[in-house]
Image 1 (cartoon, rainbow, N blue to C red):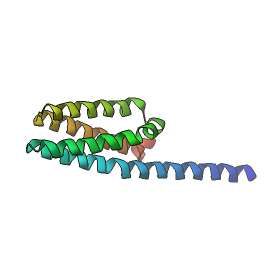
Image 2: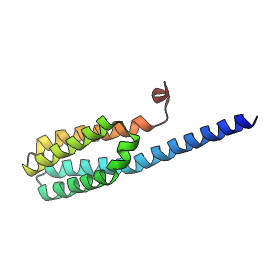
Image 3: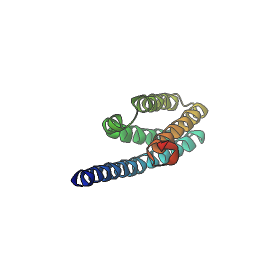
Image 4: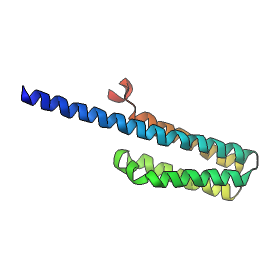
Length: 126
């Protein structure tokens, strides 16, 4: 009977850690997507200064959490997002608004996918 309770405690701990990770990622990734959307809107309007500020904010936040993401996420996904951020910064530096909007949209999709991968759902379980 003691072994059963130990197993239940370990399972509860794992579920709790999963819930904490999911919450952490959602609270971190949602603002990044919003900032990318705002930067994209600014770039399409020709407000390059605002777009670059938002992009720098996204890059800083991403790098701040990079180590944690590499521990809990697929490295290929994390590295792919980092490459897309670099490409987005190049588009902004060259003031290519439509290209930036396309890269930003891809980035938003990648961030959403990263968030959805950690959610507890039937699709993720089976």
